[in-house]
Image (tube, rainbow, N blue to C red; front, side):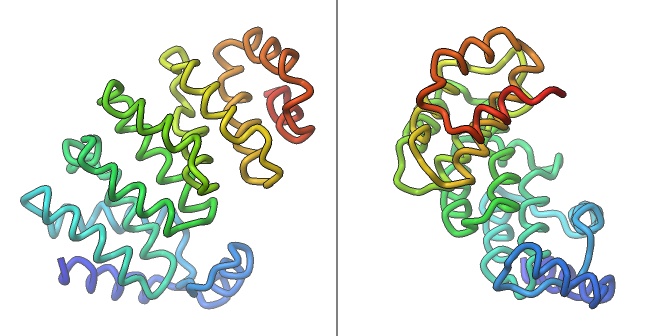
Length: 226
């Protein structure tokens, strides 16, 4: 665990671009500094480290994710923790409902779109593999006071296409439909626009039926042409 984290830190520092780092931190409004390493490169580095320094148990996997996330001195380490969660080598643990308490904690801790949106893909991975167990969790998050849990409940089905659970999606949207926060409204529009690629008629009907409830931003996003 410590070897993985320390190797990650050393290699990120080597790859860093100070000029890019300043711009990244300003754009993300991040309290954590950046090294200036592009996200695709962080993911590639993480995959390399997974091959070099694999873990042998679920507990070690979770502890490594937590160690990288909690001990982060630069934001790219948080991106690496997320890449670790989505590493194909560990999908049997990352897509099991036992990972949900960790995902919930990270979403609440992250509290910003770049991290929460990637974590929402992790939530979606669990929902795909264990729908019956995960569905009530997503429904609960859709009514939570925490904005970022609600955003995750709305966008976790992005890319599901015909497998989208429309009942779950509409309940998730309904939990934030009156929220004036930009990130809630944007998530609603994004989720609807994504599903429109599968069933545009349903989305147009949903928007028409809920025109008075949806914010202008959500409506525009939902009906935006591809």
